[in-house]
Image 1: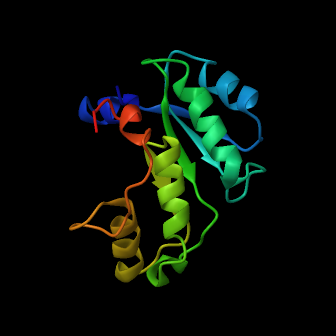
Image 2: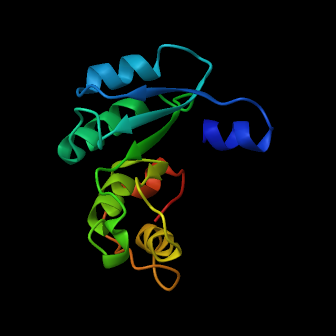
Amino acid sequence: THPLLTAFRASKPAFGAWITLPGVLSARTAAASSPHLSWVVLDCEHGAISIQPGAAESAHAIAGLGAAAPTTIVRIPATGACADGSAGWQIKYVIDAGARGIIVPMVSTRAQAESVVAASRFPPRGVRGFGSPFTHLAWGTSA
């Protein structure tokens, strides 16, 4: 399930938690703190969470809570520089780690937004390469 998307589709409020401290136990505890959480953000830009391996480990810990786990969103540290492709690896990494959403800070132009979208999608609609044998499991699909 995708609790945040479910809340949006039902036009219901979506409550969440913003996590800035590193550690899988911190992430899992915050995510499990209330059955009313639809989302959690792992802040790799201004928080103390590293993108590698911190975000991946935390995303897996949250997913380990099961189908009722809140949607995991990762705020990557790259800022607006996506138009030159420099943030593509961060986007690919957090999607492969199991993030259901990504916040890319400081995107202020159409070219930057298009670059973010392209980095998030496989060809022909994007430029993201396929590599992870596990990502599809987070989305409930088979490869």
